[in-house]
Image (cartoon, rainbow, N blue to C red; front, side, top):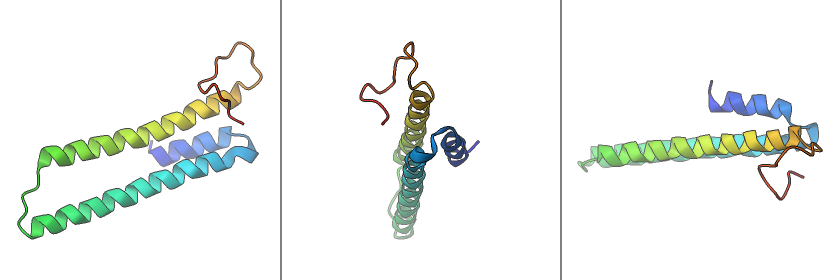
Length: 100
């Protein structure tokens, strides 16, 4: 399942007045994808001009980007859980400042 599909699933679990949270995550994921594309084009231009590309650095870049995207979705998941358990006295919120 792609991250955007997971965000759409989580959006359905949020109260209607809080769907904007999922929109923010979608926009952030699109922004990161745009940044990755710009980076790819820059690296390709460097390679065309004879610059040696370090594969280890590129792999680290990709791994870091993947982890950032996963953390965005994980944060949305925790927020949805807090909304789902709102008012449950036995639930320990992920975020102590609340979700409202």
